[in-house]
Length: 92
Image 1 (tube, helix red, strand yellow):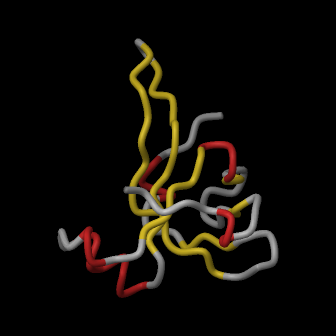
Image 2 (cartoon, one colour):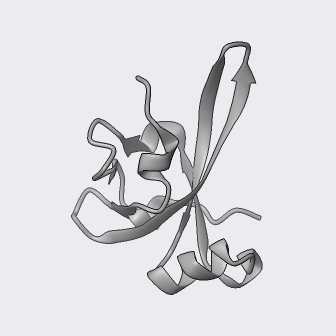
């Protein structure tokens, strides 16, 4: 599946119960020749947290590590988390 990253960065992410999990702030991946393969996402909790993250205060906001296969991007304007937000790990 090809997804334009500018469509998903900043979008609100909701979990399987419809509860807010945060906003997609970063997309991490590996360069595989002509392809860029996503490995995981960083989701920031709350709008203020996302704003702080974008302004460079990454250590002061609550972030969550989301594996690539835990987000449904079939509708990039409304991404969905395929698990509960409480199952996500916070990066070190």
